[in-house]
Amino acid sequence: MTRSIKEVAPNVFRASYGRYYEEFEVGHLYQHRPGRSITETDNIWFTLLTMNTHPLHFDNEYGKGTEFGRTLVASGFTVSVLGGMSVADVSQKAIANLGWTDIKLPAPLFVGDTLYGESEVLSKRLSNSRKNAGIVEVKTTGKNQHGTVVCEYKRTVLVPMRGHAVEDRIDY
Image (cartoon, rainbow, N blue to C red; front, side, top):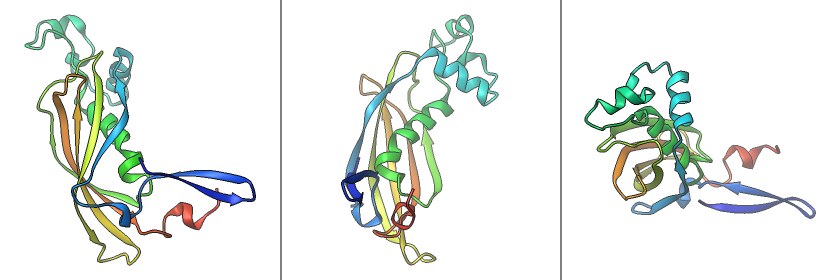
């Protein structure tokens, strides 16, 4: 994660996170750390919050009867945690997420697994509609503690150029 320190007053310093458009380079790979170990509570709360009624995510006896032999972490939770993990490296300074595509879940994530993420910069270009921003596309991949890919997707983000992020314009 890109972190810088800005002096906001004499002897007063503030951390700043994220990247400006100019700091992204095609081919760079950002490994998002720390990882996130998934608990049963995480999974059950997420299914309740999102009204996901599939018993495969919260009924252990039902899960035992499936080909997986146990309950699965809800796929929406996997995508959400992975997205959150990538914020400090990819979108901390972003103006907006423009899209998520090609979401794949090639292997299950289970309660007790630890999720690790990484994002590769696929492309970048200047915005046609915003003179002080650019569009960055990344491919984010989530792996469990064994290195098995459990989730991947492409994400497109509108990112400000240096000097044009919210934190560059306001004092908070």
